[in-house]
Image 1 (tube, rainbow, N blue to C red):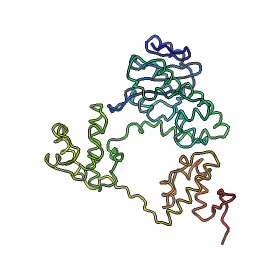
Image 2 (image 1 turned 180 degrees about the vertical axis):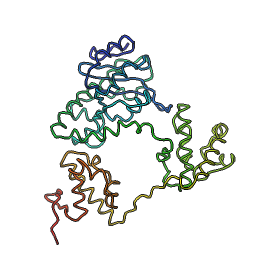
Image 3 (image 1 turned 120 degrees about the vertical axis):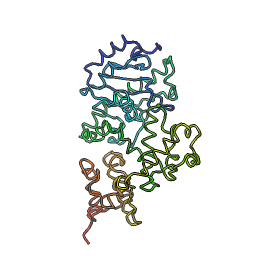
Image 4 (image 1 turned 60 degrees about the vertical axis):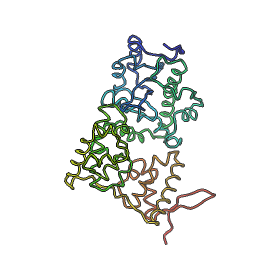
Length: 389
């Protein structure tokens, strides 16, 4: 066991885990973080699980223990789970139990409502909120190696020690501003099981270069992407080790029906050809025989005129103005793509609903309707009602 300060528990025995669970049971809030490796695997290898609660900071060794007793507490719906940039941590929990722990509070998302910008890093947020500079010496640690030394454990413990404090400060600030409920939709989306278990038939949408293919070629890409996912999961290897995106796109474009045609595709190695060549040809053939009515729809992307692009630029200025005035990251209010859709006639954008509408959505609609305009005042922008002509 590493020689670490008394305030940080290193848990690598069943008895120590049982004692920790006794301390955590009944706690209303748990701050969580994970250290993992996944460079050579499909599923992330969980190497350390950090947890903090009122009066408790611990690093738990999943390589030495069955985490089931601790996971029972983490998955308790009565307990708020606090994480920073939770997506990857939630993926790990999903792999452990086929679902994610709820409810969630993500301090990175919360920070966007406090004027810290989009996707602020944990160390940066701790520095700005707590005036604490985190030691980054162990950033490149191979967390699968044992034993861990005191420096590594302290580094890992800091991730939840300060996270717990950041959470309570954020709750106080956002509650005083009446903004806590604004976060719920984003937290709900990140806690949605389907986020971590996408349907195989939709995985083609994540393939780089898919937008360049025609509908029948997309049907082939859809089959190849689903096959790659199955192989990656079964062999626990990264997707790119099975078949790279650019190779799949080329396969979909050329759709060979013979092994010699398959062999001519750049990136198809001999071992892949020997092991899975016939299977790939079958996947391609099956996709090519699909009824055209079942082909994936090619994204029609809105092509705006130069004048419409200028209107989008104007709306972006309104977005930044209101974001700065309310200490909210403009990116949290709306993306440029959403504004482009708005200019193209979208009337159901997220920015037109709920708190986003109150902060900026109604203003955007007023500008589009010619009822509001921007003017420069003392070097800054001001949104004012338009003067009737």
